[in-house]
Amino acid sequence: MMNIWGTPDDAVAPSGLSVRDLSVAYEGPPVLIDLSLDIAPGELVALLGPSGCGKTTLLRTIAGLEHPASGSVAVGNRVVTSNGHFVPPERRRIGMVFQDGALFPHLDVRRNVAYGLPRSERNSSRANEALDMVGLSEVANRMPNTLSGGQQQRVALARALAPRPGVLLLDEPFSNLDTTLRLRVRAEMHRLLVDLGVTTVFVTHDQEEAFVLGDRVAVLHEGHLAQVGTPDDLYRRPADRWVATFVGDANLFRCNRPSGSCQTPIGEIPVLVGSDGPADLLLRPEDLALTEGSSGTVELIEYYGHDAMVHVQLDNGPSLKVRTNADLLHRRGDRVAVSYIGSGAVALGL
Image 1 (tube, helix red, strand yellow):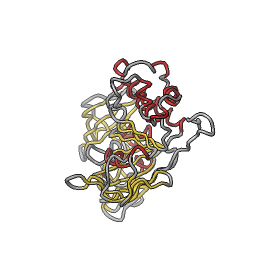
Image 2 (tube, helix red, strand yellow; image 1 turned 90 degrees about the vertical axis):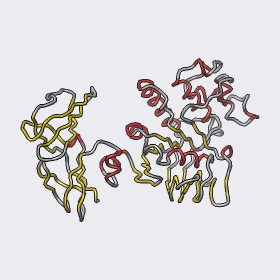
Image 3 (cartoon, helix red, strand yellow; image 1 turned 60 degrees about the horizontal axis):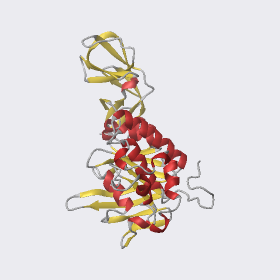
Image 4 (cartoon, one colour; image 1 turned 180 degrees about the vertical axis):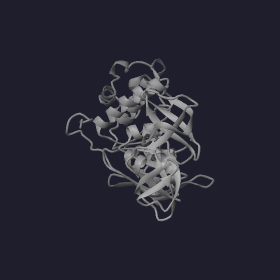
């Protein structure tokens, strides 16, 4: 791991983060309800969920920009929010990068970065060190409006890193970039954060982004924490039907007391995780294959280059999504059969 702050004597270790029983309300119903989450030092955690689920509110509460109704927040061993105790944002050792970067248009790049430092240190080498970390030393004297969108986000990241935070918070930092630039900046920032080893929490509503960047993903739904786990945990072993459909494409077959196997319109499916009562059997599109036959009709084909998604309407069942390779063998209107090629399905209790 890279020593991000220069000499060993200067080094500041990343801090863990602990949120306990956090509830936040504005003037209406609660936005967050009894939410608890632990993040290890150096871990990258994605907060994933639909608009309005409380992701940004959680981030702002951790940063100290919102006061919770109840609960606590601790950075390392230091409690920064609890009942009757509140540490202001500037004293939390937490850096934050906002969605639009929030750079000052009247300050050049170096002074934008230095603005995040204590006044006594704004003329030190810290701003230059932070710009060097994000690969932007050569633009230190330029104004923000002369930079690309990706460069502006990296300047915002340098400003958040300059004070040597124990925790870094990112609020949808790539959402204002076009698709090609977004992928490039995302990859650059991911590698940088891993190399730096700084504890990072970032908000996104993009499932692919959460899975690519997060060591773990925390899925929020209507103010509650629906599930926390690695991307593989969430995709292959979702906690319930809502998580299963939110974090990826899902084919669901209703089954009564699935155990060992379950009969479906595409044949008998082995069941890895059963249920004592009625349940939905989860089949991901890559668990299915198209074969010769006439049990369904190809309705739609979505071509992505590296693979394709084929929608098939079964004659005696629902419409299914089947992931195939990029060599398309079928067209809309073709008659096909669908078979199961996965290792076993998960039953999601109702």
